Length: 374
Image 1 (cartoon, one colour):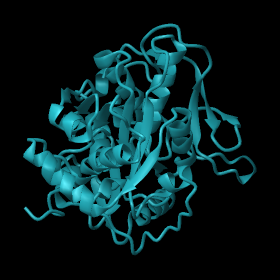
Image 2 (tube, helix red, strand yellow):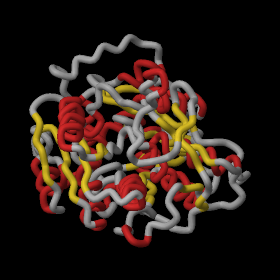
Image 3 (tube, one colour):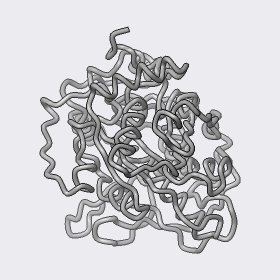
């Protein structure tokens, strides 16, 4: 991740009521008239140079090698889907094995700037591991709450970084509730990567990296979405690139969700969504999110980029997990979900034979093999 960003004055803006607030890692929700909305970061002056606006001056003290992940072309998938181009960005080889590291570096840097020494966070696994790693680098004491059914490798990874891990029974949302209660009862900051706008800001580097590799060549980016931080950050980065006249058009951003956890896809496609997370399941645990706090922000990013949204079932996720492995690419189920999404988007005509498509492989397959018959 390039540390040559453009540090500018900024403020928080509530995504629901539009009210401004002083930026702080301690501020997660808007309290004006019980609004309860989440915040976005808005910069007070326009972009003048190529590097992204960031709320953190540099990342040198917490840098673990995040960002600048390799991009590979797969001609066999161009042929499989009848696309003009198909590339995979290898987020699975990030320092902690997932795309979360850019966001974690930004969030933990922001917390370090405000003298945070101990905090609480919740995750389905990858974000918890990433946050725990950067907390360890910063010398912070972290409490990470994860579902009890999280793959053991992810649990072990969080633990070996020195974090205090809390295993919670029930669906993913139960970990969020437990973390919030623990934070309140123990007087500790709840440093949520889902609620804090700093995490999404770190994700902007993804789009700058894609631009550095392809200039204006990519027409479509297909993203697996649980809480949506990568898609949000990608859209924000491309908006900056467009505002600074680096590009003319933002690539179409497509959202892929699991069929049993598709509140964002449902809203984009005007379908009724009923959360049944206590009974629902999917092998794509990284996107098994029933109540994403930034749902409306993700929806707006998809619509503003003229993108689309689909949901995919476990059968197709499993099929593509095996096919990817047979191509030499071992990823976790969430990544396989995005390839299943590309297949579906092509079938329904959202992608065409002229599309040049990029997908992020968001997590290492070494983190989750238990769901598959191998």
